[in-house]
Image 1: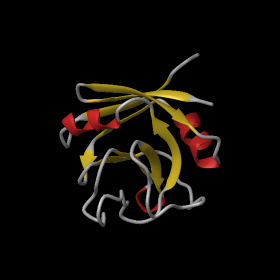
Image 2: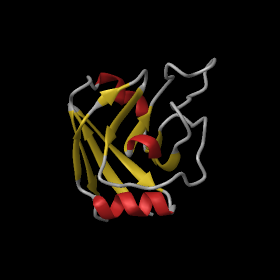
Image 3: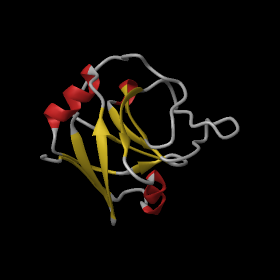
Image 4: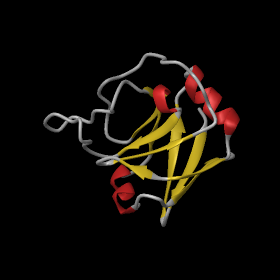
Length: 124
């Protein structure tokens, strides 16, 4: 299992990648620096990984990390989005779930749009 550090604005969290092809491709592209876009309780940003849908999910869990193929974007889900129905967490369209934030993903509510975001390998 690969672990990463996500730093977004003043917030830092550890996350674990799963063993999907998408997660491995993102791992190989690290470190990645970008600017945060927000969409409801989701942060997303373009990354230099271009893949197709792999077991795409229309609804994700709190704290899931996803890859959104149409926008070549990395997504951090920490609550409802404008597409959510009830309490579900629904991306704009299916995402490849690549991992999960450890601890409380709600810390990302403090991150404003435009904040710098860095994804880095956490060496074990």
